Image (cartoon, rainbow, N blue to C red; front, side):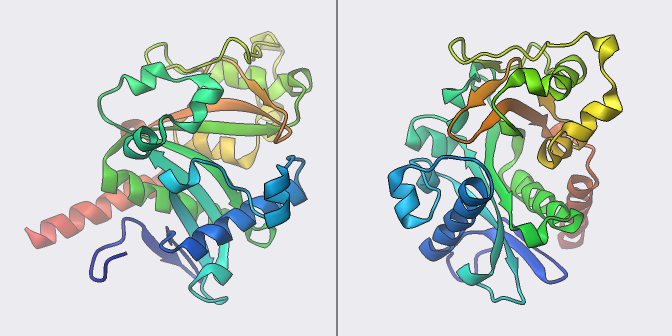
Length: 272
């Protein structure tokens, strides 16, 4: 970052701060954290190169921004990274050649939208920091990023643990019947990878039980007003079943986005 420039994301709450990665070492720390969680803690299968380096990385990383959560009591550099979220705007996708999601979902309707869109992915938090306050900080960081770049839609793959959709029929069916995106923007799983989410009749689903089975990240998206694409995709490498989530930022009701906009409006009025 150039000295004197304002960071697009910079929020501190207690001992934690969220901002974008600013050095190669900080990116490597994020990749190491991702490896620890995705491959050591969960059931993902690393490539031999990933395994030898102990990092999760791919050809998209250098075209993305990386939101990092730091524990200030551990320092203010790579050694203090305890959470990460990878984000990609149109500019990065154009340079890379595509968004990550297009290998699983047809997102042409989103791509046809004229405003700025943002792909979210590779979210993970150190086990010692998996609490509400850390997730709230992540959403506040995303809120700053959204307003800084005037993002209109956020989207990305979100995962349920396991590769058998039938065993996930309760949460998948709940999402399909209650949170399906409108036809104007709805992504659809690619034909060769499509797994139906309509696995149960609506009146046979216990909504409370279904929500309980959803991962915290997907529940967070739903609280932001998120909607779900049509069809799930099994990801054998990560041992997950993925859905595509879309959030229209103009309809977001989350208090962190509202709070940040009030802060921006207040500063603007003071300057004026």
